[in-house]
Length: 385
Ligand code: NAD
Ligand code: ZN
Image (cartoon, rainbow, N blue to C red):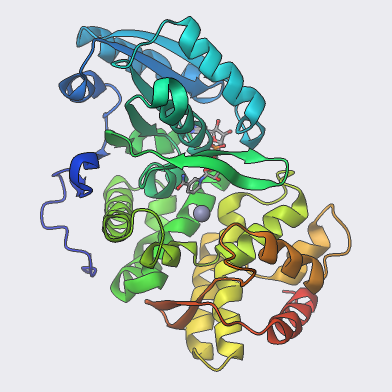
């Protein structure tokens, strides 16, 4: 394996997210759920835990986790919520907090989020606000959650007015990323998570992107060594950015590469499942590179590399194809721009874009001309494979 910018000298040692009193470890490996009790018990102040999971993940991994907690003499209860993005709303948050209180939790009870990003965001937010904040542990079971959502402490739910608009920063006490979970993940979900992995290479680690061009297929085909390297490098990249800027007042915004475009596409589909978040991000990263080229910032060769790697993995890269396949007829540049302006990343009415100078060289730009953006999107909407 070629190296990457991130220094991962001992691949088996936990990664550390350095945030002073809120610091924590990320452990990546196989069999971590079966072995979770010891690690979780070591950081508990009380003796009770409540596991929150969804109805896809529960049947697959809950018994394993329960056994491990029992073996470590940790008392536990579990709450199962419906799988899917719709569960990240006020109704389910209310129900979940109510069930937590009915289970007579106290301030020393630990919450364990066992599932994908939906469970991590919902359970993490419940942990942030119940009894003014209890500890929680992330056990991410999707690739997206392992490389992105479980790290960094952003928790929350969606509002009828948009995604992730209600939430809190609440860092987990520990992240356990068990690579075995990826074997049961539907391929489409795996590929969507892979889009966020590519993102880290594109932002500031060109060697990692080189590595992914060679080894990306092994990652998505289930090769554990390749998955370990990809998840570790991604988490190390995210941990470094979060440690530098926990609340996104600066450099953390780089993690939104592809997301300003991507969120607009997700909003346009009405979150109906036509487009998974990672698929929208893949499309969004292609658009961010192509737009950068249009602005004279980045070479066509780099845009082509981004597009062909995403294509090779099986992720969407042509906006025209997506628009044509969407159940919502009539995507327009102006409709997409309206979503972008409403995105919570917009500041004082200005859209914040992550643009590229090259692969591994992205930067934050707050001065995009709406006219250039409209012309670019109008053109991209008619482009097809
Ligand atoms: P998800 O949690 O909905 O999981 C996707 C699907 O896979 C679900 O149906 C789930 O039940 C199923 N699943 C999960 N693990 C499985 C496994 N091991 N085997 C089989 N099926 C499994 O979605 P996701 O893609 O993990 O996360 C998306 C969410 O994450 C979005 O709500 C997004 O806003 C959020 N997110 C948050 C952050 C953050 O920093 N907090 C970052 C990125 C994304
Ligand atoms: Zn994302």
